[in-house]
Image (tube, rainbow, N blue to C red):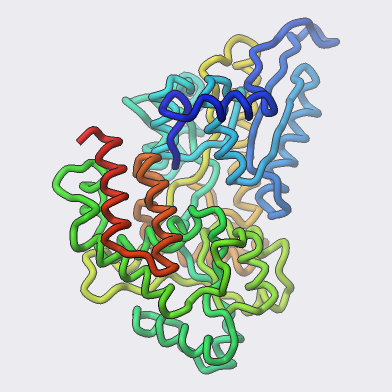
Length: 439
């Protein structure tokens, strides 16, 4: 996801930004009216929008505040990109908030290596009916050296194709099941003045997470990627990775995206689709919660969901999407005593069985064994849920690569889609990953 704090950030940036953001407080003291110790608990999250998931999580926080007058819960909600930047800055000075939304895989490992997190095994083990109800391997990317540091609060396939069936029908376009059919669809939409695929890559992780990770897996296969991550038997300058970059570049050359795609964000991307200016957009499963709350009934009824088509001659499995088990809540290493008890109780409220149900009811997939009531769910979410029953999740690049390599990939893709040289970009990615793993 990104390189953290002690793990190599510029100190001057930390000093400047931390003055504004403040860190996690370890303050506690006094007592509430019923004799309970009064504590202050800080929480940073990315539930700042009007999507159904954010609304559901804010409701849980409000209920927690009402039920726990002894806890002064100080919540800061930021857009995802802002949260990542804020966490990066706080980590640099070892001033994490008490609780914070974090991502599995690379981010979790880097926080643990920076001695910023505490494990939650003791609390998790005290509630076996909760711990044992997650889907298989759900805790793996929150586990470091045998210790569990969080649990997923959702399930996040990151690379799904949302398309407007009415627009496809209007221009006689077949929903692509091969790469050539995808390119043909792009050409037809361009000829008719319709944006083929809306893209908002201002925060440059979007192209990587929602599109390239899956295309690359289609070309190289997952095993090659994991070897390249470990720098053990594969490198990002290998021919198969160059081929993956070239496949991604084909989309840019074919004018799959609207002009200025590197200057608008993810929300603006979805707006192009909901305004029916674009036939498709590619995003994670989380986009359903946004569509349900923002799209017209007509657009919702016309929206279907599929996956990117396979790449002929590729080594990867075709019925896959990149993704991760979902974000979790990290608990600062500094939290203890009554503050820790409150933190664990809030963690359980948000990520326990009731929180998982609230998430599912907000049209968001979960990594937890809970049945979807299709009679009450939004029809678009039912489509997503049914699609994912037959789709395997493969690694998204920013959950496995070092922060330096993720930055090289993200920046490289912006350059690639504007005509950059695939071989040169591959060399930068290889150099960054090799340097991170010390090879």
